[in-house]
Image (tube, rainbow, N blue to C red; front, side, top):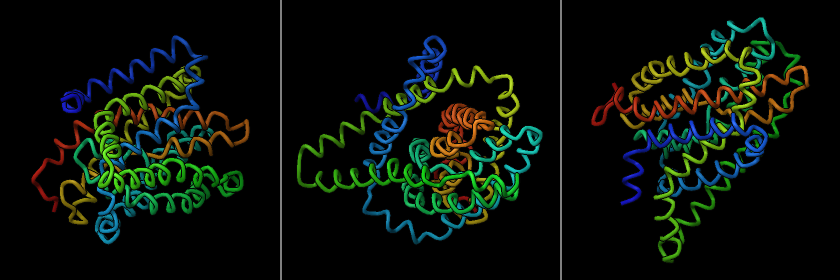
Length: 322
């Protein structure tokens, strides 16, 4: 079966997609840069496919799972800011680098974390149900943390509009369409075929998303690489540190295996594609912030490919984290 063949080979296929995107972006930077407009549509399609695989009628039950939600809130809005502040001190002498690191690392992911966590056997339906809470929390707290870490003068130049727009386009629209498809699948063969088709297309859609993001952004990273070399190790260190911190959070809140994996993924993945419009809206003197955010995307995508294979080994099946 094609879907099984693809799933069994998903890690090397994702690496191929990353390399293909990087190669195209470096060899043909002008047309590759034009692919930036395709990021949101491709990501929306990927999330639609992901939502189709989740029994959406059970999402209401997740809201009442207090230990999971409490763990997410503590990890993302208490522990992560401490880690991020410490990491940002290494680039505190460079305002654009520092602001870029804070922008992207202070905001928990609400989109493709659902995809990658699901591939690792995490409770991705719980992350979907928690997305509104995580989105609201970062909208309210990002200006607060920026004011504390770099000064209140930057708060006035931040527009939360892109947050709201991204939430609607990347979460609400695909979710509503997926719910409608699931509803119709019980009554119409066409909807059933759509669901089966997207089940097969999941891995190719992840590959397409990886290739488009990398191809459209890699040349901008190349141009500023000398400065970005200061933040790349910070992003790698963040991914490494968040594994034990996520596992510890799972233990403190007595989460089971799938839920702990979801907590680790939530703590490690950041909202780069959503905060990018915020970075692009900053004054020209802070133009480098957008490239700093994009660099985190590239590092994280590679990290997520590794996480999909690594996290199930660190948090094995048939074990409850206590």
